[in-house]
Length: 259
Image 1 (cartoon, rainbow, N blue to C red):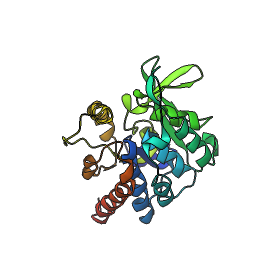
Image 2: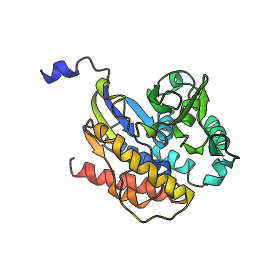
Image 3: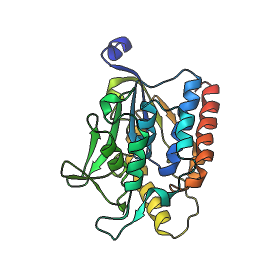
Image 4: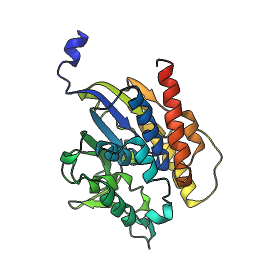
């Protein structure tokens, strides 16, 4: 098939897919900054968990540097409240309030760039992509790591972290884009780890995510996957600026090589 014929009906020129990864998702903002410097900007964004947060802020008009600044002085304790378990150890109401105050757009339709957010329907065991209506609830749903955080209920359905079934949402936009850039903030390396609840949960999810991102990685026209991201933990919230800089520098080097 002729390439022009293949692309002629695709509504978007460039799509960017942002993986999950906790605070490591700040590398997405660094990557976006490096792409902007090469005049590469997305016509549509797809995000999961941390990628949904960065994607929503970027689609709302925040610059990559502004996104990094928003999370520079935030601690896990500030964003969560310990909770007697009824589905999760922590509530993230404080984080939900933070996102509600920070995002100017309250619906998908108000965003400057089309956005898709992936969450997991815990009741039916399937991946769901949100594209319209209320914006805040899908973001919180996409970030609700099972066991750690209470599931987010939307229209009577319980949702948890989109990364459970799809931690790299390339396939949600690949059929509609001429080119897709995928940014994976969670390359898995066998680093040392401490036996804490947070670290064991993080490592367990990383092994699970490794299996569900393989097919999506193959759909990328350009895959950006900073290997050194494996040196950071999902909840290293005090290292946000380092992570942002790593995303920026590694992407700049990649683009300068003409990849």
